[in-house]
Length: 115
Length: 112
Image (cartoon, rainbow over all chains, first blue to last red; front, side, top):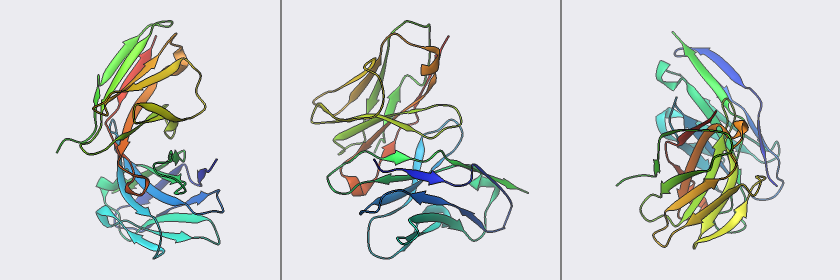
């Protein structure tokens, strides 16, 4: 089964600094990749997704991610973070070989933005 | 347009009891997946329902079962509750794979 590994469990950063949250996936075949954000006591909200085509995908709240097939990575970036970006971020993968295959999540990265 | 709704929001049960959690998918979504999220961990896939049948299942024991109704809503049942079943249970719906999942806010289950 496909899986993702989030390389950092916690990332502290100062407000207005850039940030990168790292994600590697296991599969060598076609994949769909997603980043979700979870605020305290809430469900997960989709930030962005990579399906095919351009390797740089843009999402909500100023986030973007780059798909790198040779390195099997899908790192999330934001050029300037805000206090409100403090949350848990999850990378997820699914196999597009058939419709609505299950989605597998990483363990999460806790982003803490400090003033 | 309502998103995914889950009920109840919080639940406290005693070891050995049984529990039923409910989920209404987003309008237009016919596939429902359930996830267990323990504290400080990522969501773990329990199972997925489509056309009222369990289509895929993660590594969870048979104590975890589910159902999907003709209106696409779904239930998650857990029998013989263990302390380790304490977690946030998330329901997600989707119309197709590329869309991604829309998640509900979850049901926080505490087993004492």
